[in-house]
Image (cartoon, helix red, strand yellow):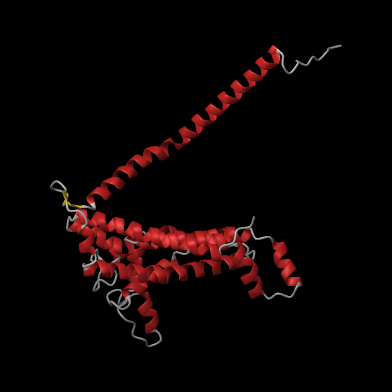
Length: 317
């Protein structure tokens, strides 16, 4: 018969055992920390390739630098010239129109499609993949070239309008319509927010809808009073991400206009003009100042959305 003995709390053996347990826990904690830092190592290495250009551009924003000579410090001169540059003001106008028109429409279409798919269609994975695919390809050169062909003078859109005796405009080369074609392209790439909306809709408890149906609530009231409040954090996330992405649009305007921002600067996005200044005209100091202005614009609109979110975003505690 074995006898189990228990050490007195204040005995030397009990203190030694307690000390040994603390050492083992400390060693385990240090091992976990080392593992965590090891997994973070690629991110730290990547930051070295980001943080150096980040601060370098901040310095160059206050210089006159053309890539071939030493930077010449000019203070705030680049920022003063900005607000007298008509093409920069035009690029801001184009970017703002593109962002504030395409983002709400894109989010509305994405939410609508997500609501349809959330009704339990057969082959949901196939539909989800089909709708998500444009998001992967929408910013590529090939898709923008295809879009340019679709809206060309003899493209598919004008060919379709011709069936009804309608003479379509020169969508790509007409300043009145060129930006609209790119807005349609951005709306077409709604797949990414749609997938996120669909995931959010799947998390809404069905019992809320059942209770609302028993109380006689219509589908619209269920959507307005149940669905929208519960997925408002998802809407907020998609809004922020889409705003940031739209302000940084470059490829669509570059390919559609051949790098000029035409016709008549109607597709001169801010990033495209920044590229022209930095890598075509070699005014790298001015381009760096433009980059920091864009950062401030994005930060301001992001901050405004965070402040406004207190009034319409609801978190389930």
